[in-house]
Image (cartoon, rainbow, N blue to C red; front, side):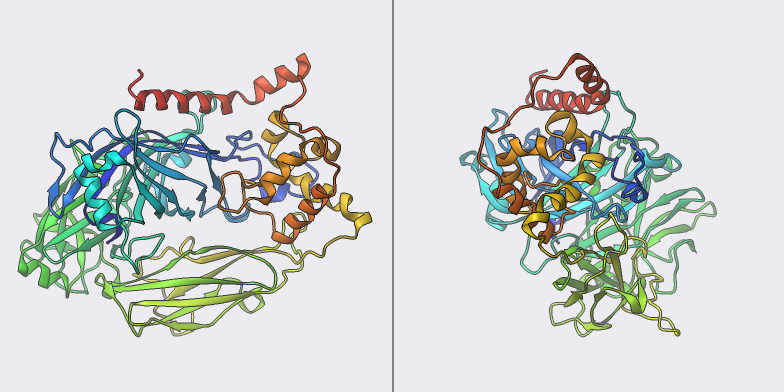
Length: 587
């Protein structure tokens, strides 16, 4: 069940998403023109947790934390004694699976003592959708699900019973889910580059996926003609059903207010597999499991635990789960229902960076009504067709645990995009195919636009001769100077190698770090290993000289330009500090 299991804690607050946007337009690479700056051209790629505090949880199934529990008000934050975590797209041509890199999550006591900390395993968001109907970019929502690795508990954790229970249940790894929405892209505002966040931390069990919940998937549907509801996840332990609506219910605005159409949502077992979303059940036709009230008080993180009678548990083992609302004639409108035949398949670790001639491996998890589905054939198909650079098997079969491993081999793309390295390719998957052999995703709960295995396959790169080394490094670094102007404004112009040379030590540090390290450069993780090796070779060959750990004092005109163009970035930093002070009780 991952973080939907108990013991668990939920939390809420805001997040900082200081993403750079000048690299979002693929056509600007190699065009010689000025890129579209987007809404945050001077973004530094920073991801941070702002003012997040524990607001709920369960100590055991069906046992919510009492109002006086010492877990309430604990601060959930990132580590401040290291570089900030980074957000990274796979490629300008693929911005639908932004990943968090280099994040450490801490739960701290009211005196600032670290009670729990863990290293967030890099993961990409999923289930991107329009949570505020008609509100464009600011109304988007998505979920990040991952695990906290190398978990450590501080001495004070024993005084918080739910944390002590988590340590007993899952001492080294924990599951974490983050739901984000309402990003503010208005430059100069006090909440610029931030949005709202809810989260949940709970046990991680061996064999579970790393980046999603392998439970019962309810496909998206419509609460009313113009108000959608997105996919939800349910998981059960026999006598309880845990429903995660954290990224499913619609909002009336970016402030996080629940849309009135979602004030109360019923949970039911459908009479049979033939009932579709949009159908109206006559009174008494479905088995009622309870009602989730989202107004006036929202369940913390949107996670709800419902008791199951033996009759309900038996019905759930055979029939679809659904979300319903009252119909005008007294029946029940089915607004969302479990995927077809209760069969849910999804790829873990679905985002890959692959060198030419190397391979990538993904694990597919299959569940039928929440239980592992063994002996199941999963069909795979490249979106690029026969000319794909990334190749792999056409089918794989799940083993006893309901998982199947698929390995893809990468050829050399041959640089078809010019200034952009390699190609981006997608591989879809499904348990069914149509009569003409195409993947059949109808009723699968998978969105063909996003729910794919995606890879940036890099071009082969031959090491340049010594006499060509500096020219090649200049070519490799030039796009970073243009598309990441924050470097030039605050540190060094990467397009000017004479300016780069005094930064030899800092550049060596950043470029030699592991890709999971927050200090790794570049922040977009888009530099191939052979090209990174070329730059490192050049840096190591430079004479050791004075280290430039700060820029020379700029002239007045440059100072005014920097102040004007980086105002939005500095505003984001100010709000991060303000939320920190608020969380620590300083305001």
